[in-house]
Image (cartoon, rainbow, N blue to C red):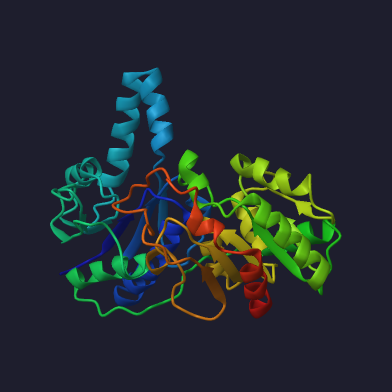
Length: 358
């Protein structure tokens, strides 16, 4: 097959985008003369925009399209046609459609992309030319390896590259400047704490949160026993979680939650000794940047969404309960036992994990 132009379409969150970066690097190394492009959401664009193995990164934002449609049907049609023409004129030979959505599959087919590779879940992959059936969703192995499985359709022997997150020099310098502005020194034990888990799950994100009181106690112990400097991080929607800590803690912390951009979050994280968070985008950013990480896993399977490749720089804490993981087939149900899987992870366990990592 003569492949000159390849497209990857991934409308999902930060973790899912980072999970595709080993796929990107494998494609780059096997098709050195081909052009590689990516379609991401607006929110994840900063994570993938500077990837050196990509030639183009396009933005597709579902919420923006919904807002346009609500205001004007004609405006929506114009926007859809504009995006359709943008993709069609590129004349892609292959697309990796990771959306699990038949509507997007039909769109990519109409764009004239002859080879369409992806997953078939509940017959949503009916417009794909090459697909792997996943009747039960993803489980038992890491998502990055699921994405690499798709390369078999191009006869590629895959390699387990780490996640890629490229931080331009000016952004890296900005991170150091922000730290200095907060009075932090190079030799300080800098520990970032994200009591949230990112915005991907919306209101259901609470089911992924280790108890806020546990985070508070852990921060106090880290400051008192390890003389750590604590930096609270997260999105605007998680500000209340960080304020719960700042309003009650008996030591000084730096609260940057909701006050910095995603790129600035990456720049700050790159300067940390350790990031402590729940399962979610921040944990995967730490992995990609090579920063030690500790993550608490509740409803989500750590085998599928945890560390990759497996190494000693990252620890995931999870409890074996008959009901977990309860995130299955891309759905989460209300918890009948008040998040016991997360409540049973003690502060003592977390503190001992931190000592191992630093």
